[in-house]
Image (cartoon, rainbow, N blue to C red; front, side, top):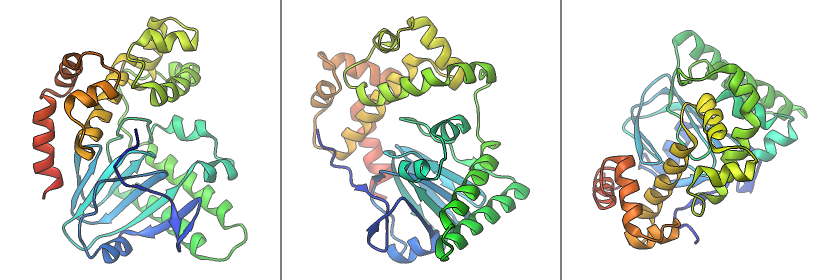
Length: 296
């Protein structure tokens, strides 16, 4: 089923690109300060807030926009920015092709724990000394992007890696994380996330994923729990609920139709799962979010 949620491609000067840089000030001027509508990107987005007040709604979770905050969005996440004052900050955007062509390994991105498939990474609160470093890296990226150096994307990729490494120390990691488990299980985690993203509407059981990976369900749960701090079952449930939220707010499908589209033969099972995960019924969620987030 085709999603009605607007999806934006990575563009610069009306052309498709692999990398782009712009400022929050430019965006604010372009929109006239009006909130954008909820939408998704097909690329990674980093929002470095230097000075701004407002709200950033990412996959239906609302976060305050305050100075010294860094937001990191994975491709496909739905978000909406509501700015309450003249902003100052940088927006760095890149896609998988940029990473590939500039020899930035997928493992480098995933191991930093800053971007996550199907889940939201909380915004980073950056300390003053590190913020100065990060802003310097961002300025170097901007200078290279707007310049004519033939090696500008080599420069950009180098500073982007430094930027992300500096940010990674402020990521909130689970207390249950174990570096050795993360290292030994990262291939399993990567394939599991890919399988989950492709099959969450059909595969609801851990043993289905474990069978595809040729491991036991217990081992899969242990690897995922050690690496991410959540069980495989929790990630499956969260991904189903996230998609239900997206469809509930951005389509005309009924609760029953959404349940069927997500692989539930009995809509009551979907309703129970949703309420157990969120603490509210699907109808309550839809009514509250429509009023509090989309109509402000």
